[in-house]
Every structure is written in structure tokens, then in C-alpha cells.
Image (tube, rainbow, N blue to C red; front, side):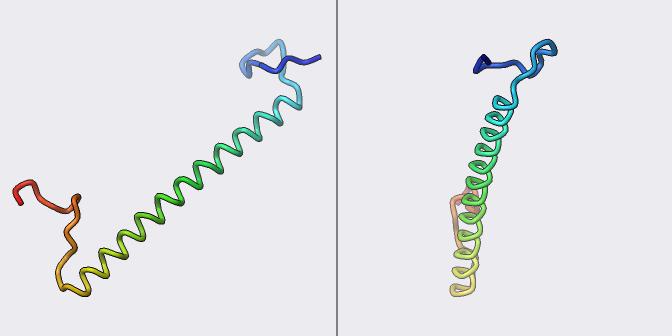
Length: 73
């Protein structure tokens, strides 16, 4: 009989193979989620940069965005 919780720092009682497998699966799921979130954020930044570049090309001047505006204007 094994306990569902375990302490990876406990040198007297090692976690079971099933517990370690479940832990590795949780880590893998969290890693995939963070990678997906980073991919979405990167693609959004890329899309914004492309849109700004097209605006610059068609108008001949840089696109004005909230991040590119100065405090005095």
C-alpha cells in the first residue's frame, strides 16, 4: 500500500514508480501548456510587428502604437 503524497527530499522513504511516473506526467503537461502559451504570445507579437510593418510601408511613416508614443505627444 502506497501513500498518494510523498516528499522527494525524504531519503528514508522513496516514492513508488507510479508516483514518480505521475509526477513526470504532471511536469510534462505543465511544460506543454507553458510552451503553448509562449508560442501564442510569440505569434501575436509577430503578427503585430508584421501589421506595423505593412502600415509603415503603405503610409511611409511608422505606425503609432501606445508603446511607441512619447509622453509629450
